[in-house]
Length: 351
Image 1 (cartoon, rainbow, N blue to C red):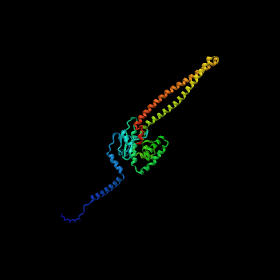
Image 2 (tube, helix red, strand yellow):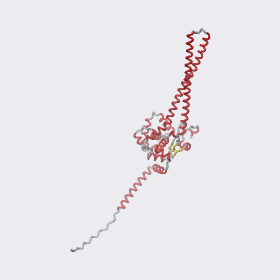
Image 3 (cartoon, one colour):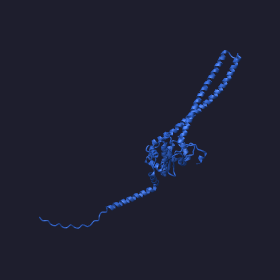
Image 4 (cartoon, rainbow, N blue to C red):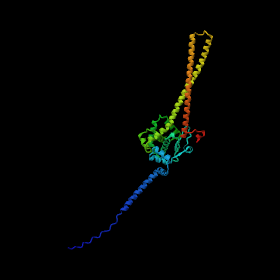
């Protein structure tokens, strides 16, 4: 068996090495350039957000501040705006240097300073007011949010806020609050409504509830804290009003009855003198008339003595109510001090 030599294979032309790598790299380079370009545009149009992000990264919240954020159910976005505002808790003197109010009977517990983009919170140490600091922190955080919103965003939420305000036009406390802000913060009605409604109103429109869900995971918890802490004051105010009304009613009754008692005894003493004089003279009336007049005089005296006893009892009740009122007033004064309400002097109003 023989083998023939195979014909030689034809020489193949050389081929260039595929440049897949360069193609891929070139494509990645284009994508990277596009991404960097888009990021650059975003950074230019969101400079405050970028600055806030760096602030948040560097900010170390205290345990108390973190607790405020937790208890008020701030979402990540709410907490971001809170921490971006570098909140700090201040005692009275240091706080008043930033947020003092010189309006009589008005206490400021927090403020958002626009120029600094910072939140300052008053250090409430009264255990009876548990929850009030969380509400104030949330209120100020919403001011920080409003400060960072665009005009278009303001315009979108404004009708929703005004609708809620209109629904509470008959609430005297709410109306009084808005009147205060109209004087203290002219031109900031929507800004204040944005914070007040978000932290104090239970029932809001579904659209507004959805909006606030960006900043609170369970806003009902926050509103309940407002209701509970606010009740500490409203309940005492109601008690004071009730006691004052009772004192006023008692005073009117006692004053009127005491005047009747005095005039009644004056008339009785005069009639007794006249009766005794006629009895001494004799022959002025029969035995039956004598007994009848005497019984009448004694009966009048008994009625006047009973009236005096009633007056004395009511005076004791009056004194007891005054003591209760004094105690409540002292308690309210202590609470007022806890929420930074101070007596103002003439010079204070100039600051």
